[in-house]
Image: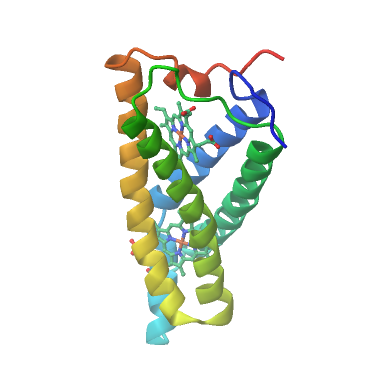
Length: 167
Ligand code: HEM
Ligand code: HEM
């Protein structure tokens, strides 16, 4: 379906950074959802003031799922730029694997969260806790890779996500 493109579109770049902001929020403001969930498990009341942040965790998580699906659709319909011609095979495999696994986390984290929260499937929340740690590791590798491309390999790969293709 996709054609050969030399860069990401404005929409693809915007969606990438919108998801970065939402994911950062999920990690920086997770205390409220944890407190509410623990109170639910203990049969006590959550502390006052955690309600809004709890609902924002859920809303932001569901939005991440929707945006990740849009990105995958755009990937399929429009395509994404190829790695630089001189990219070693191992780096291609690494970056493609990390991107694929990040997408897998962006889909499975909201699904496990919804299963735990709305259907009281407690094992799903345990899985959710493991998956968020995996996502954090993948993001660290991803950012290291982007900086490595820019500073060491001196390729245009990092700038692709800052300067969309002019179409
Ligand atoms: C990509 C989207 C999401 C990310 C990145 C994410 C991330 C996180 C993080 C970092 C924590 C704290 C875990 C810990 O420190 O133990 C957490 C906890 C939690 N999340 Fe999410 N979350 C997402 C979506 C959702 C959704 C959509 C729901 C519910 C509908 C949800 C429900 C929960 C619950 C119930 C907890 C408490 C788990 C506990 O404290 O044991 N999450 N999430
Ligand atoms: C929450 C943090 C982040 C997540 C979840 C994330 C996720 C992703 C995903 C899934 C892709 C693949 C896009 C596709 O081809 O369909 C991607 C590409 C990319 N990201 Fe991120 N990203 C994050 C943070 C960052 C940061 C901080 C930077 C810059 C330092 C960055 C730079 C890039 C670049 C340059 C690409 C394109 C790589 C290429 O064309 O081979 N990302 N990101």
